[in-house]
Length: 128
Length: 128
Image 1 (cartoon, rainbow over the protein chains, first blue to last red):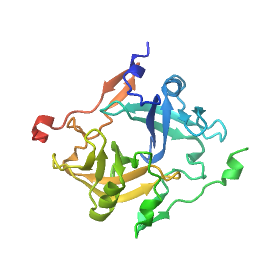
Image 2 (image 1 turned 30 degrees about the vertical axis):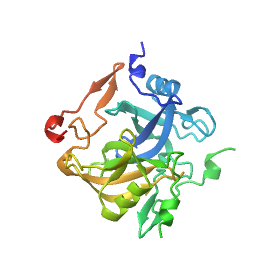
Image 3 (image 1 turned 135 degrees about the vertical axis):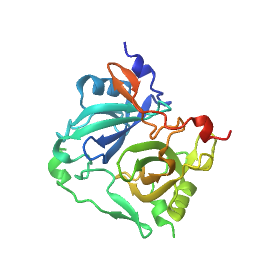
């Protein structure tokens, strides 16, 4: 029934890296990990689920912030050990800092320079 | 001198995940790991360097295939533990299968379907 899940090469912790990419702009919005349950739920419900290693549990992206991610496509790489979720980002904010993307720092002149604005104060995004 | 390298949060093996993304199309072409030396060389020379875990050594992408990657930008994520290389891919082939991207399989109707063509026979790309 879930043979496609068996084809994913889970790491020694049962996880797979996931790249979340904006469906329209192609921008990489975030990078996280997912376990088998998270990937199954993503495919079933069409919203991005991950596994948060810091909190050690399933993570339905947007559960706190309301910034759910609608997943239109899931891709697997040649080695079978990395996924891409093609997403539409609710609220236009994927990063917990209130930015569109987690990748807001660019290496310039030997330092990491912040190049993207905070769109919304994280204190107003997260209740706790 | 390399304070920006110290700001990267290397994992317990001294590696950081790297997403290689096409500068023009935004397509994610591959995913790999890099160690400190690889990231330093990438910044210095402007061609993508990685660390191959299977072979346990520095990997200058293209060293065998000729498919070097010119890196125009390096980005770091909010947690400081994932990089993006924005690249121009020599030969238009990033994947060892001879495809443009390593992410050539899409989940459709409960199975992974190959949606991208092989552009060049790998046997003609790699000498050994």
